[in-house]
Amino acid sequence: MDFSGLNNNPEVFDTSANRREDPAIENDDSVRDPVDTLEVFDLIRDIKDPEHEDLSLEALNVLQLGNVTVDEAKKTVHVMFVPTVPHCSASTLIGLSIRVKLMRSLPAGFKIDVAIYPGAHLQEEQVNKQLADKERVAAALENASLTDVVHKSLSAGNRTGNAPAAV
Image: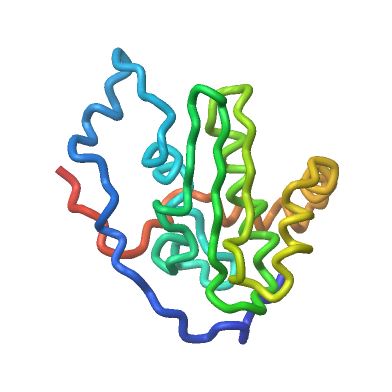
């Protein structure tokens, strides 16, 4: 899919904030990690933008910690994202990539809601309707070309920005 020319010069943001104080705790299998907003944000922050494959959604400010809500007791996750331009044709793919990453990463039973931030897109209502429809999401994931774009967005080694140095 060709997204060239939609936003040729995106603004890139600092991604060094919103990190756990002690990331070593995250890797300790003897400690149960709660599913909280930072945990969910950590799961999705590095998803690549379909148009700017060298930049993460966090680096483009498409994903922001304040737009993620989690209720672990009710097993619900709500993520709102802000496309880089109001006419972004990759918005559905971005939302689909976020949904797929969370479906693969969260414990079974979580209800996942992914939507465009209110007022951030010209076709917000239509895109949100597509992202909320389980049958449409399932059909999209059966489309080989869409699945390839989603897998590319989720591939490893995609952090861009001011990540903390490895210890």
